[in-house]
Image (cartoon, rainbow, N blue to C red):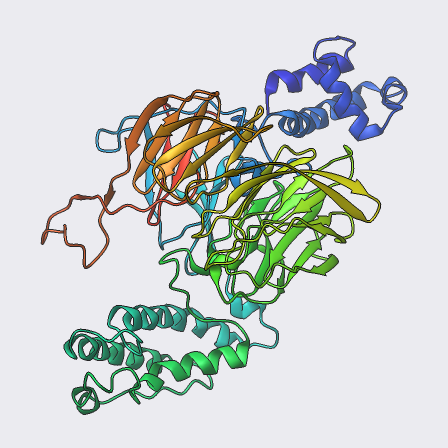
Length: 583
């Protein structure tokens, strides 16, 4: 809250005109249009009470009017915050630093090793940074100090109907063991169609797997039967029998049993981190909403991390086939494999549900973009090209822009928020970027192709800003296009990767695998700075690690866009959370 503005309410109540416009908004929200008559008849004591209420209330009005990225911005149901901020990647109120040096401590406010790996973009809610970890954790970190304020386990077993307390508690013990089993399977070529160079690799893997199976058996999860292979059986394995070994059932059967019984997958090893918690949460300032791939859709109190409501919906079989939730016009929108759904955020009541015809695509990572062609009717345009009406979920049409490559789907879409949408099919195929103009005609939509232009390389969700499109490509360059014609205005060779770009203040911020690139804005962008991320190694098999020595590891992986609040910039890597600031 801004106290000068809050005291402005006192001036209004005592007849002063200072801060009158903002104060009037507060009074109208409290009393309605006839606020002046009601204030006039109050006695002195009542006015004093109203003054205190007004001071408290004005913070809400002021925060709601501030631009995203402002130090005092706080999300509301009308101005939520989630993936890429408000889904645009633009933080006009931010004034972040443009460089940092971790080893020298320059512009580093704090650095926090996360309790587990993760790959969801952080969300800043007031003085909290909310993020997730791979083993279904929702964590709130103090923006000023970097200390963990609260940590909540989003246990999928608590969402599955009719599960016992014993099942729920023991699931938290077996889940990491199943992840470990999958890792051993892939690393040591167990049950692999690609024959290893010798039998020694899978034999070593089986000895490790045997230990993991023994630890899994010791948990005594209700109904789960484990067979542990003997060392004699392992020594009898040969290179010719390894692919169809009878031992493969030892680790396959538990997976099959669990998924058949509970209807959700147990482990996800692609991408290597993030897994089923990859989707970035969204918040209306009161609750934070998560959509995890093992079936969890829930609301949690921002202040305490307490669960408010939750649903078990269709789990995901591939973590790259679902998107982050978003809030539009008071509705919580979830795009999950098989359906597009709208809920009432406060209660979790289902408002509408419609089949998502692009559900079978291997890639469908982009959050639906919101258009309002007539200035009122909100449309949801998915990354696979379907156009839905927000009010009732009705499918109005299909742009037909799905990827034609091996990973048939859609990666991203962005637009001008009005009637232009820019589609990037993405995946591993260099399809055209296509711009459409959309019009609503009753229960259908009309599309007009405005331009089509080659991407030249795999691209990720771009930023649309002041008539220009900024998108970083996988061949280490940033491309600036004219949004009206698709013409490439300039390119800049620099470090880029999978993270979506973001605009804060007057700069473009692009995270690559182990650092940050900052450029200017405009048709002819210039490099401003590049900063490196270095981390204390926690990889047990890291080739750079020296026995008993501490060092900074170059093996840093960062795949999500930064987020901003005032002069603070928050960056998430797989293992760490950073806050960079001059203060």
